[in-house]
Image (cartoon, rainbow, N blue to C red; front, top):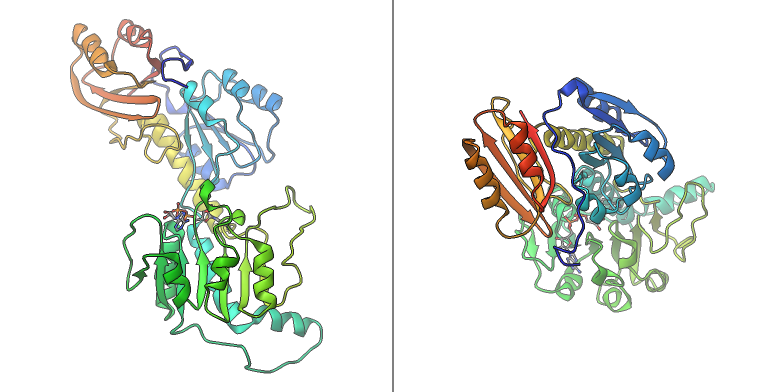
Amino acid sequence: MTMMSMSFDVHEPMTTIDDQDVKVLLLENIHADGADFLRNKGYQVETRSAALTEDELIEAIKGVHLLGIRSTTYITEKVLENAPDLLAIGAFCIGTNQIDLAATKRHGVAVFNAPYSNTRSVVELAIAEIISLARRLHEKSTAMHGGVWNKSAAGSHEVRGRTLGIVGYGNIGSQLSVIAEALGLSVVFYDIDDKLALGNAKKCATIDELLAISDVVSLHVDGRPGNAGLFGDEQMRAMKPRSLFLNLSRGIAVDTSALRRHLESGHIAGAALDVFPVEPKAQGDPFESELRGVPNVILTPHVGGSTEEAQQDIGRFVASKLRAYAKAGTTNLSVTFPELNLPSDPARHRLAHVHHNAPGVLATINTILGDHGVNIEGQQLATRGELGYVVTDVSAEVGADVLKELAALPETVRLRQLS
Ligand SMILES: NC(=O)c1ccc[n+]([C@@H]2O[C@H](COP(=O)([O-])OP(=O)(O)OC[C@H]3O[C@@H](n4cnc5c(N)ncnc54)[C@H](O)[C@@H]3O)[C@@H](O)[C@H]2O)c1
């Protein structure tokens, strides 16, 4: 879609809302710390434990400025059309597939999420699993529950001095690197991007180089389309005999039939999987996988990032992003908006102008301000795809006539005056 053919929703200019008039709706049992944070800022916060259907949400969202959801409330175009006061949506989770992001941009609604809050939880699970697999803990515990006392050191190893190969050295992979080194593992990694090696970790030029030297291989890649089937028979063959394999990243990255074959042949000595090509949709739905029942395989139901600490961190993190946007116009780490990390200075008067990204918008805004004798004290512009965002600090509150003129620009998507 070309920029100019995209139809944007034009809102009335919005002047400063006092904190006590900001309405927040938090759904799906978001951690209480998120609501507490926003209440402490004076906002009116309503919380609900369940997700809402489209019709329920349309009813509930009237007059709401900030909306918080998790993964099962769907934000559709129709919801946004019925939410003229909505400024921002906080996805109190990592994924944003449940939100029609293109529609949020057309409606000038900023979206935030929590991309980092559960990374430590994933790392800790990976560490626990590396040690569990090396010591065959799962197998031993299962045998004990079956009444079998098999006190043997055969096949049990320390991890100290072993080589961990991390594929995907992003937020999780790089943290795992640091903690694994602290346990005495040597770390090598492979990433398609040029990443800084932390600690004593060594970068591999190819995935094959990593596979040839790693005693444990752990996948931490993202879900880009090219990663489907990233790890199959060929890669497993290239692993060292009796090595261990972990995938806590994306289910589609691994060929589980090939993994089963390599586990049964003993070439791979153990595996831990937290994500699967097909996962049950709802709590209690049956789990099907060819890896069920294979010895020394730890299967967990996509809980790598699911800890109370992560939920708490997500609650605080996303709530603070919503607040910073509502109060100061800050869009740092927004999923969709151009990013501006702005000082929160209550002494300033601020105009936050979201527009579609076309040449000359900044000049037009400044001409209008200049024509009305408005003195600009500071200004920042950022663009991202079809959106532009300019924030202008001015010396005095801007009159309704100026706001009206700015709002009437054909490129304007949303205009707010913040004090
Ligand atoms: N199991 C869970 O509960 C859980 C929780 C959080 C995140 N995750 C998943 O973990 C994965 C990593 O998360 P993150 O926050 O570290 O992501 P990230 O985007 O910070 O890092 C991913 C890294 O993988 C690299 N990469 C992508 N494709 C690659 C390839 N083919 N070969 C080598 N490197 C490649 C990227 O360049 C990037 O550095 C994601 O897929 C995420 O969805 C799982």
